[in-house]
Image (cartoon, rainbow, N blue to C red; front, side, top):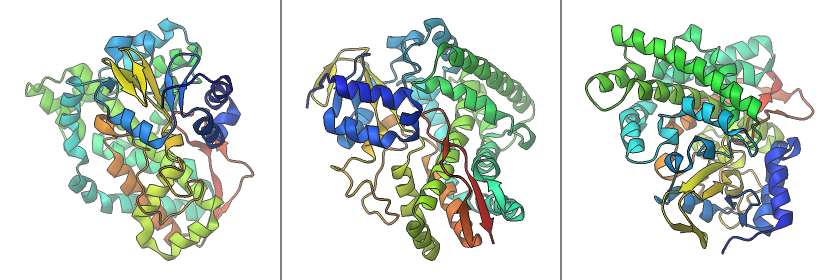
Length: 418
């Protein structure tokens, strides 16, 4: 199906991307886009995809990539719109600081960078972390049960993932809390709602994060430890073509991505269970559902809602010809509710079979830490449901953060009882 230009669909897209209502409930807008123009030529340039198969194909197509070399810093982020109307200089400042990592790279640089860190996220390595994660989860839930009335985002959804990835990367425990506001400021730059002011603030936040890791690299070079950062430094010093700038940028990426998406998985997932008490009770009575249930929570309300690719060479996607530099927006959140791929997609079914959501992307940029996030989700929900007799919502309407690319809750107040 070739792309269509549709004014009503284009307006729907704008409401999705740029209004508080769109960010609070993107799924209504996704349905309307899929029905009216599943391959949309937007008024501001990119082709926008909302069907599962089209999105999967685009994510896997080697002719599509990040395209930073083609588009330049002024062209966008490679993952989101990075602001529909942003001063090019503000955008350039951010991507000057955020580059040099695998998120924004294409082969061969992407291949080299990913190979050097992938060994830390093998299934065997992730599974070896499970007992430590279980212990961390129990400590967090002890705190929740002692307090009874808590904000899950503050007490569990942020502290747990940041502790797990902090141990893996090598960020000292006392330094981790300061990164939450810093990274929250930085990732706004990846969102369609970003303006010049937020892009400038994001660049300043990246400066702080990079300065911190530059100092930590110097320390680990003198006193290496059994952590990922020390391993990256050793690779660089062994002549493995990893520059100091790449070491720092990779450390910032792994640490920030390691807690941002998992924080959203925990928050979005628990909200979904509170809104579907029959499914919560189903999981509580059958902990063996954990693997399938986490996958369904990822499908239902993905921590990452959209992605972006650029044509690196002449290509076509969903019947639409592309020239080098053309952009494609991939609405992963819409793909995860596509009725052509999922039976009764608007129903939360923790036992859903044949469930392969696009929440962690696909292809060469498939999230490196996906298996770690899934394992953390399994431990969090199994332990929470086993130890808490009741989990009662203490809010009327969920309070969402102001971003769509990374979709998550600002707060999730609940009352728990052992």
